[in-house]
Length: 87
Image 1 (tube, rainbow, N blue to C red):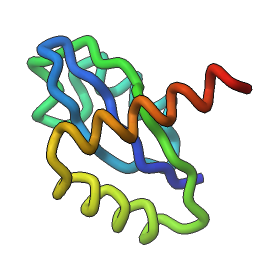
Image 2 (cartoon, rainbow, N blue to C red; image 1 turned 180 degrees about the horizontal axis):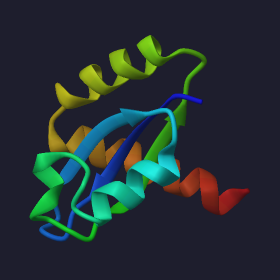
Image 3 (cartoon, helix red, strand yellow; image 1 turned 90 degrees about the vertical axis):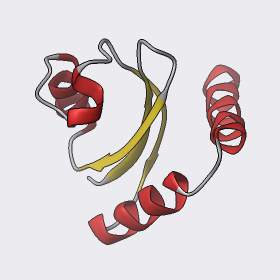
Image 4 (tube, rainbow, N blue to C red; image 1 turned 180 degrees about the vertical axis):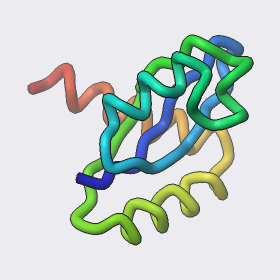
């Protein structure tokens, strides 16, 4: 199941990636075996995710998010978190 996701790092930066197993990927980030960017910024916390039907769609979403500025990413994160609270 492909996902695009964002994590907030310990230094308050936001990392965006994609994976087919989100729990395994978060575990890898927090064990220092994930992306080089997150290794020195642990722990990371999942702040946004989106399921996709195909890996290429998840990859395209990751690329689009990486082009956004921080304010737009935070707006996406806030909306996602609000939707989780309302459920």
